[in-house]
Image 1 (spheres, one colour):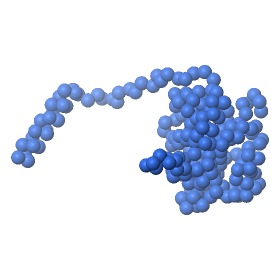
Image 2: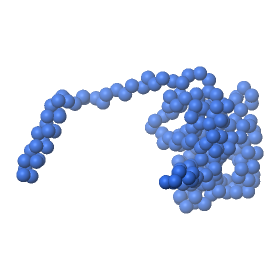
Image 3: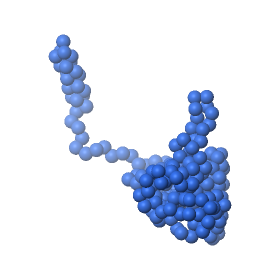
Image 4: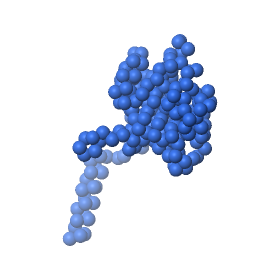
Length: 209
């Protein structure tokens, strides 16, 4: 009986292979002609989406970033990626550069300050790609507070526009507000899979700086 079952299985598989024909010599080309959202990115829409997700948005000029970081994390210990501009950090914070810190060392920090790769106005999503001013994904997951500095020219209208700017080979982290989930009774619980507090520093357009 066992031999009959094995033979039956092989017969089915053989028929499937015959029906499919010879395998292609090269992988099939994946269509990439996505429909872009087009148009200019709506910064007010992005702010509305982020606020709806319970993130705190600070709109300012670049010279004021250090003041915002001071207001949010002043007097505390923060982890920063090696490529973060030093001018964004006030003297009131103790900045620890992530030079392959252990998870325990990252978790012990009060917050993290990073830049971003791109943001989607339509969905209120910020994407990090592991660039030097953003660092490893782990540093944005363990501290309780994440301050993310976003340039207005990094904001695009829709998801297809963001995908067009990103390199799929890089480690991408998509963030839509602070970490949140719901238990079986649909009670919102924050901070389970990442920081409970997300502060987005949205810099003024280049023309206004």
